[in-house]
Length: 132
Image (spheres, rainbow, N blue to C red):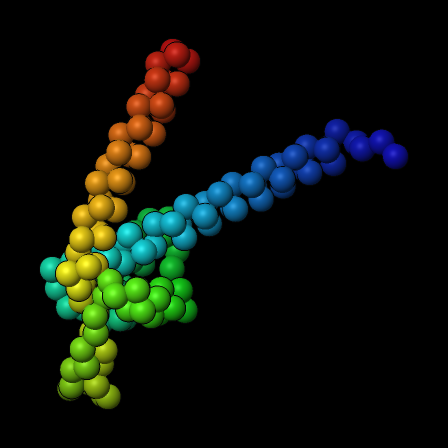
């Protein structure tokens, strides 16, 4: 069975979108822990405040259902500590802060991010220069 040109283009566009969507999802997943740790660096934040802060980052596309499991895992790993504080607006709230191990890990992550960022920007710049 032969495909029409229109159908073939549609399939290729759809496959391309699926590839991009999968790639973008993987990038977001890889960045979430990094962004969460950076968000609470030097302060103690209520979980929902973390969600609100990260929602403002273009392209991150996160919700509470994404953040809380990651916070729990970071706590199990010893990178994040929690404290319960009374709230004037309802029940007590759980606040998250970096542990010493969490700060050390974040420092490593930042150093690695800088290396990756410089490397990828160099590749992109080189490719742009070759195309002009």
